[in-house]
Length: 493
Image (cartoon, rainbow, N blue to C red):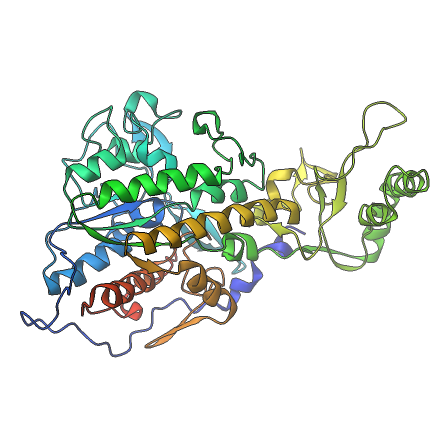
């Protein structure tokens, strides 16, 4: 069963990068201009997307293909200055803290003896230790995992707070233990900046299957959990403060909105009905749910739940592909005649989003007991599925954040990148480039790396082009774009 629910769509991989003919920037002084922008000191702020995170890790090649670094190389044709990054030690990814491993290596695609592909962590030991600080300042200040309120948090680079109030990636290049990301950025007196922040303020909630709390109405981030949704008013207030600080000395800049996170491969790769079953097994499983199904009908008859909910909670398997059984906390709590409550369970529908990591968990057994199959006889916990109710919470916050970003971009007369529309195009029709098409199909689409969340180098090149196009339009510049086809995509073992 487990084998059948693997990512079978990967069998037809076409992973070799296309190598068509590409245009190159004209290397002639004065050919390109920065227009009204001053690109001599470019600083990039953001999260993992800005840092160049890919394949579940930060590593040198990913950083070199980060969108800010790609942009800086193009800026160099139009007066841009030096651009430095807090490069990792290796291409393995992962982190150490005083010799102890605190983050895994990057993922690669591995094929088993039967030719089935699956993402696995690179079998290497990380060599980047956060106790060895990078000599700064650095121009790429993207901090993987950062939410908006982390950028203004003093002590976010204090190694004594790692695991609680600090971030190990910022520890590596913070100017002092007590500084903040925005303080270090402003101290560099940037003449130009990019700011792409806010994804993690809803992403961690979504990727955790909605385990966190929607903190809308709570304006104290110090009370938030790591998987919580940030209050939109908190987001708006801090975003305004960030732009005020970055533009205080007349710097120009560009900002991007937040994509629809539910369209990324992390949520779209595992189908809602991934369990194959023969008729005999289906009949056996159904007998185990008979009492539960009858109880739901009785409770509906007694008026404790609606007929619609009673039908929604009916568990039924049949020959062929089947939905999985999940715990849904939004179902009505019902008393169990034997004490306590009946389980809040149902089967998935097309509206549910099963997270990518569930692909290697669904169909496994508990303790080797063949009668205890995860997703079949053992319901999946909340963290494996993002339900429609949970998706709505994330979407509501995203809509509010994006309204703030676009309004403030206009107020500060900054270049604005509609990353939401760009990602939607990748998911719906694909984005053509000179030599291919980038889509959001997991591993084969070319746009997303093996973690299903972060872009490949090709995807980051696409993002860089979107920034450059918006900057050219806003500042009457002529900065050359790049061709995504010259950049690599996923790694295969």
